Image 1 (cartoon, helix red, strand yellow):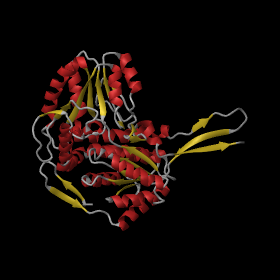
Image 2 (cartoon, helix red, strand yellow):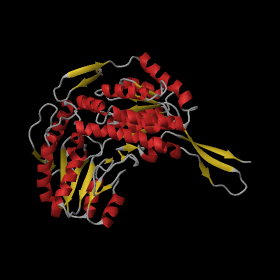
Image 3 (cartoon, one colour):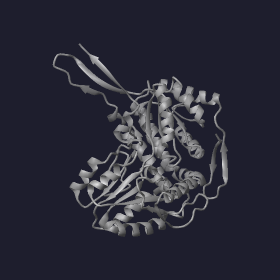
Image 4 (cartoon, one colour):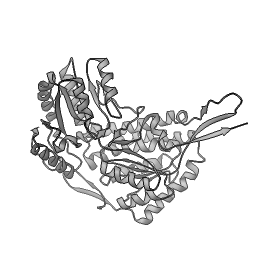
Length: 447
């Protein structure tokens, strides 16, 4: 495996290299997290921990330009979107600072009169490993670290190999916020070392955001070692358009669902399912609008663009029709729309991670639901209709973890994020994000 490296996707220039940790460094990282847990998880109060979370939020805001520029350099994220990401991270830390005490409060269990008392006490479990992707270098860490630090767990962060500078900056930020040594530890581990960390008796759980392949490998290792695991994997989210009184607005929403972060979002709209009466007008407008927003930003790497090009080639070989805004150029990939994608086409059940959309036509609500569910993924979805009852009816029948009705970009720190089927299991953010790695301890008093 190559060293962790910063390679500017716009130019292909290698800007910095970071060596993989030695076995001794990995062991010391785990030892630091384990030693810190003795005070952080067992002695510190929720109030102490949340005060540090507030400091982390403040530092994100103070260093937002630096963090945004780092992400821009590492994986090509547009500066405006990178600044939004840093602000969202600050909001996540503030959210858990504001709500952790309530989320972690004792829960009384009602018993028959005269039979004493019983309660559930939510306590930390110990050091956790977070395996991070490259598409949101700050946000993915925040949504793992914030709730678990608030709960009293310590965290080991294994960043994406192409985002080492962001990882270093965030570890320094945690240190500057006053976290004790070992509460937040960055480790440049190899895949083999990740297996060692998961197997280590001191580590109590692992959370991964990444590909199906990586998720399956991590889940297998965690299962062998009886470790709790949370997985947020890929998605091929349906964007269902059944009716509209403003087609232009619906098209803009569809472009936003597909083009944000240059299409490199797990829960982006990727399969656009349009009622027959709107299909032709939608495809024409959507293709034109999508082309106008995506060519100025690269994908995260030339390898990512090459992989997307291979998927499109195979789709066309299988009978799909492609409308493209241009030709690939290094890490830059043109906006493209695939139509006539039949269920036998290889691409039909694959995830497209970039500015390429599949558009389908349907003749009924039930056909739209069946097509939306005909995928191995089940992360998010979008339903656009002028009929509120239809919106709820469709939402109830979608096999996904999240449904957004008549809007995109409406996620929030208060709302849980996660999926079903091959999109993984477990939840992050909101109340449920802090529940994943807790010991819900029963304390029963007879008299």
